[in-house]
Length: 165
Ligand code: SF4
Figure 1 (cartoon, rainbow, N blue to C red):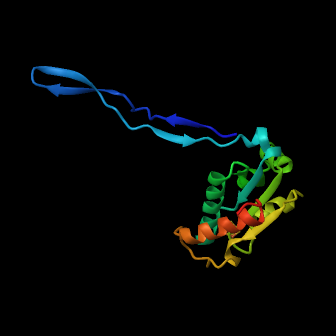
Figure 2 (cartoon, rainbow, N blue to C red; figure 1 turned 120 degrees about the vertical axis):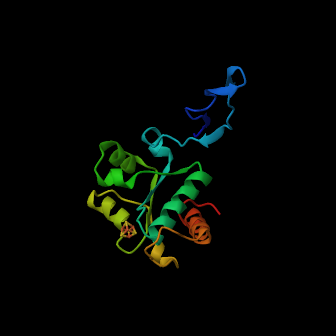
């Protein structure tokens, strides 16, 4: 479903002038290649995917939720985060993805449940919902978070929503 490719920046292999006694010579600068993992195309494969929608709130709990979604996306080919903001903006493509998804997993930072409410307003059913603030993480006005919380909650969602341990 997913694939990798190698990302090279514009500056890679750029020829640079090197000043040497008596003139200049062109030097080719080698840079290290970085591999990135491509995700499944959710617009094409929604029916085969458990789509994760995280509120990405600008507070500790929102950031934990976002990172949980990232970890699950990276760990399981069957699951993939998608853009809840685009669903909220009623982007036709994204609403369609949400409607076609094999399963929707919703991650809210706090009890405002913004991601869930986006779906409820559009009458889009979801299979699983979690509120990070109810999982032992305090809502604090910071973007910093503890990876131990992320790992613990990601494992819980994997077990309860994805059926993996
Ligand atoms: S659910 Fe809470 S943390 Fe998430 S966007 Fe809404 S107010 Fe922010």
